[in-house]
Image (cartoon, rainbow, N blue to C red):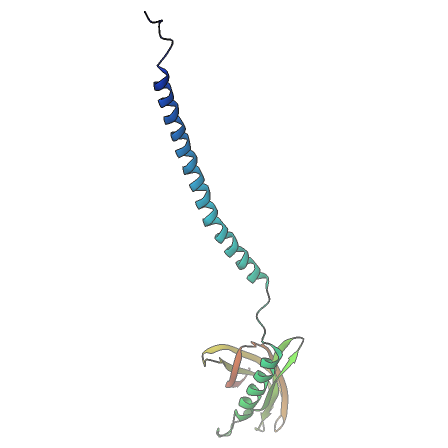
Length: 175
C-alpha cells in the first residue's frame, strides 16, 4: 500500500512552476518593451526641445563679413538709382547708403527739399526685398527740420542683414 500523498505529484508541481516562470518572463518582456519604447520616444523629444530652447537663446543670424560688404555695395548701388527718371517733386531722397555701427546695419542719406516751403518734420518709408524678391519688411522714420532748397541728413534702422534691395515708398510731411 502506498503512503498517503502529501500534495500533487512532482510532475504536476513542475508543470505549474514552469508555467509560472513563463508567465513572469512574458510580463518582464512586456515591461522591457514598454521601457524601450518610452526611451525611444522621449529621447528625440528631449533633443528637439533642447534645440528649440537653444534657438530661442541665440541672436538672429548675421551674414559673414564678405556677404555683408556685398550687401552694402548692392544696396548702395540700388539706392543711388532711386529717384532717377522720376518726375521732380518737393521732397526727394538725394543719396542713401548702408553702413554698419555696433554690429548692426543702418540706412543713412540725405533728403533734398526742392520747394520754397520749410518742413518741420517728414516721414520716410522704404520698402525692402530679400534676395528672392519677396517683401522683407518696412523701414520707416521721421526726419526733422527740412529748410527750403536744402538737403538734410537722415538715418534709419536697424536694417535686416538679409535685405537685398530698398525702394522709397513715400516721403510725406507730418502735420
